[in-house]
Image (cartoon, rainbow, N blue to C red; front, side, top):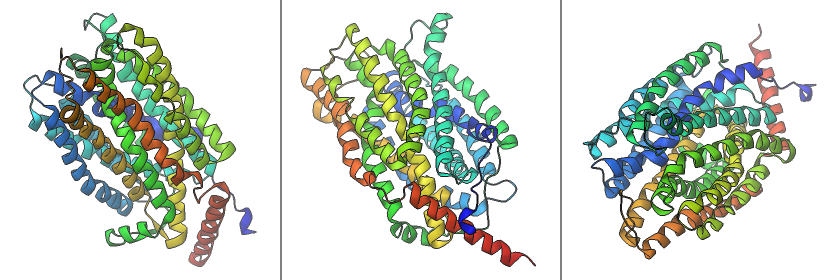
Length: 461
């Protein structure tokens, strides 16, 4: 009889309320990681060497703050409020720090950028880690988790439309003189964040469900490392994410310099981003559907294989105006195939959390998502280090008006078009035969359901 226990399914309206804050989060993270460092190097007193050092410092701070936030989020969630207080507090900290970061004062130095970057990344962790763990608690269903994280990714992409469309909108209404990303564009983006984040977090806090906060054990920090080492699916998951993430960090950091200082089409970056956002938005429900057909891990692997093949042909694109259309096509295909990264891994990690609960009776959802977020930010620091590498080894310069040698340009091509693909292909073996598929997850959920039913029966007087 227990084998037929039903798996609860969340209402679509509840899922939509849950994902709304991700629209605001998606408005800021990509600009801060992919565009803002280059603008500080271009318009302020911040040097490339200082940027590379700052990336390392930020990741050291993350190494401490991310697991602590995950731990305290797991320990303090309640039946009434769940993880909502953490999500709200993080959104407020992000909003304040983004406002100062996006001002980009011409006299700013590395101290200014470092102070507000540290506050932003801390606030982002306080918001994002509990929010992801919250999503894993809204539904335990294998396929609906993929749909939930697909909606979450679509919300993040919707936020991306805001920062992507802002430069051409400001240009066409006469506020700016071009469609380039400039300090003026970022100041207006700061205003948008101050409106969006508080509004959307209020809606989510009011209407999104708390999720399943059943009385599972809350692990301590002492047992976190040992439990991680005893969780083979988690180790494989994190290994894949770490290896591929290094390449993603390089791609994100060099995205703007490649188009601006190498291809000399910086004024078209907003249109390239818009193309990429549209392709990714369309891709997310597509990959959620593929998950339902072949499972999360195989969907993830096939998506990454296809994605790894896209960047290499961009080596042959020549700088100048003629590069615009080939690059737009390449970015559309790249973003569509990369859409798998915004659906399958996040949903699969929720299944790994279930495995930990089944094996050890401990809920470490926020800690596991903290691991994932930390790895994403740590591998992003590789992008910061590649600035130092390009400058020291190849002599590449991204300052306004700088002229690079052929040797320096070859360094940029290798770093942007080859390195990310190579790292991602190296990660495929970790996920190809991942140990938790649909059948095994169904077994895990049924064991957990029987355990909960037994505990409820024992608690009944």
